[in-house]
Image: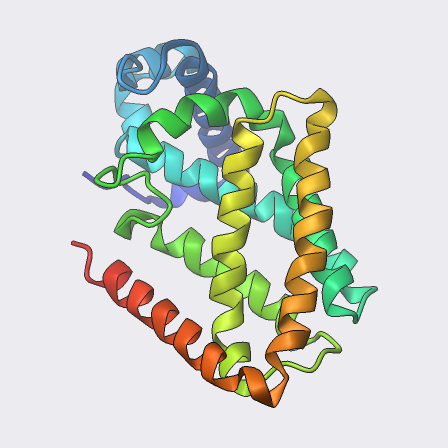
Length: 233
């Protein structure tokens, strides 16, 4: 069931109510877990009727997708100004990755709870799921901006696939962050610094003509991975 989108939904008051419901949902999901949190409980915590909750969100899944969208928008708001100040690919990627973790940090506890459900390959909350496609597409577009406006020598075939590869890389970093219990997520930031440096070196190496056969085989594997993703129901 999809949430109804009447004109009242998009009034300032409607946006406040929608945010209140989503925040209430995140709190309950953190406390109770995904399976034990009901729409009725979310509506009760938000102080709205059950019908009103369904007016804004057709299901718990819609709320999680809204959460994904919120975190992406928060990241985008700080990433864009940072990218405008930098032209070097390594520095651009480093900024975007460090800012991603910084904007996610308030949701660390909730992310750990959500991971138990989202990690299921069959869950509509999985980052690779069909329902997650809009946010996944928007996130990949951010990495397209990182690459397209960067001052770097990148082979044409690699340049076309690099945003997707960087999105996969950033998902791996988020997974590490979810399990990171170090003070201020120091281990995650250290991992970002080291892996971004490695990625930058690998991209430079990929430009070597002698690496062309290896690069072609690697990109073929990426294409097969994307085919598997698109084949999912």
